[in-house]
Amino acid sequence: MQHPFAKALLASLLSCSLAWAQAAGQSNTAKDTPPISQPISQTVSPQGTTQEAALPPEPLQRVLQSVVTVQSRSDAQASTSRTLGQRREGSGVVIGPDLVLTIGYLLLEAESVDLIDHQGRRIPGQVRAVDNLSGLGLIRTLIPLRLEAVPLGDSDTLPTPGKLWTLGQNETEPTALELVSRKVFAGSWEYLLEAPLMTMPAVNNWSGSGLFDTQGQLVGIGSLLVQDVYGDQVPLPGNLFVPVNLLKDPLTDLVRTGKRSGPATAWLGITSQRLPSGGLGVLRVSPGSPAAQAGIAVGDTLLALQGQTLQDLPDFYQRLRALGPAGSRVTLTVRSQGQSREVELLSTDRATALKRPSGI
Image (tube, rainbow, N blue to C red):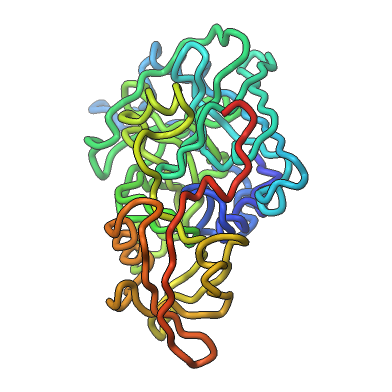
C-alpha cells in the first residue's frame, strides 16, 4: 500500500507537530519500495512438511474486520498541512462500539475524518483525542460501526524475540513480524518513547496499522519506518509500533475530555539532532514557541540543560521532563555563531501551538 503523503509526513517529523508522529527515516521509502508480501510465517512439522503458522481462525476473523481506512482533511492554512499534507490516509483499529484507535499525526488539526471498513462502507467520524505523550489518536464515529471491537492486549509482557502480526488498510491477510527490541526511541521533534515495539521485516503499510499478538489482541499501533531497530551498531530497517499500554490509563479521560488529566508534558518547540562534535544541533524552531521567543535559532547548538552537558536526545527529553510539566522554568546553554550564552525559557503545552481538531 502506498502512502501519498509519506514524504511530507516524514519531513514533518522534523517539524513540530506531535510527539509521536513523525519520523526517523526522512525518505520516500514507504512510497517507493514494493510492499513486502509475507502474510504468514512457515514452520516445519515433525513429519517434515511445511505448515503455515497463522492466527487462530476466530481471532483472525475479528482482526480482519477490525482494521479500517482512516482519511482525514485539515484546513489548508493549518500549520501541519504544510508538512503532513492537507489530506492524509492511513489505518485504524476498532477498539469500541464507536471508537477507533490510530496514530495521532493522521488527526492533527483535522477538520474532517472518514473511515472505510472492509466492506467498503464510508463512515463519518470526529477526532476524539490526540495524545501528545504517546502519539496515539482516537476517532469517534458518528454512526454505529457494527464491527466487533478488538480487545487490548498487554504490550508490556511481550517476549523479545517474539511472533506478532500486523494488518493495515486494504490488506486481506496479516503479515507475520518479529518483535526484535524495545530500545528507547527519541524523535527530533521532542518525542520520547521509553519502550516502543521494534519489529522486522520492514513493512510499508504502517501508518496507524494494527499490531496483534498470538491471540489476536491489539498490542501496538504503527507509527514509523526506522532504520535501526537494533540500535546504531546494527543499522537494520524495520517499524516502530506505539505500545497500547500507553493508552490504557488515560483512555477514559481521553474519550471523555479529549486529553489526559493533569498537567501537560513540557515542550520547548525545538527540533534537533545529536552532533558528532557534541551537543544538539537545532534543525527547526516552531514559530511562537518558547524557544522562538527566547531567540533560539536554526544552526544554534544546545550544549547543556540546567548547567549539565547534553549527551543525546533521550538524555535531553528525560531531563526536561524531570524538571516538571508544562509551565516549568528551563535554562539552556546555547552556542550561536561561536558564542555561548544561557537562555531561560518557560515550557508550554505542545497542543497550544496547534489548531484543535474538529470534534475535540
